[in-house]
Length: 162
Image (cartoon, rainbow, N blue to C red):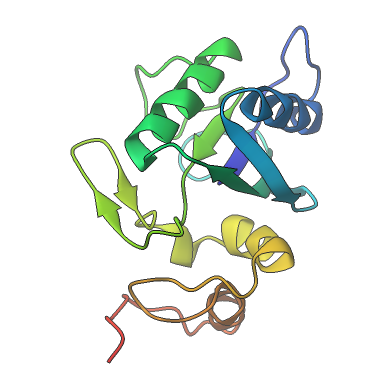
């Protein structure tokens, strides 16, 4: 799961503190936090001007992906996230399911693996610290390999493994 924040929260403070508070809340919602990456700072995508604090958590749960998405969106709302208006704007909390141990998943509200994660250093960098051996079910590459390819400028559209 990817976490990001680029706004202060009146109760939890700066973006880094928000990520830790969000992990505590997620841990109370039928989820076990197995690993957490160090947080990093990254430039925003889109019109937002505020720098993001990002991290990755490995989460174990018995929830199906769409149920987990519902829980994560409830946590985002608890932290003041409103899903309206402009895409990629500043937000107190952004939670995304990036990979799932069950492989691929798709419905009208969720696609796993996250369609853009292979292009995002702020996802792959932290993920390589805590889940380096996880495999992308589309490309067959590990998170560490994907991160290396991105850093070397070798990223391209995914192709299924042979």
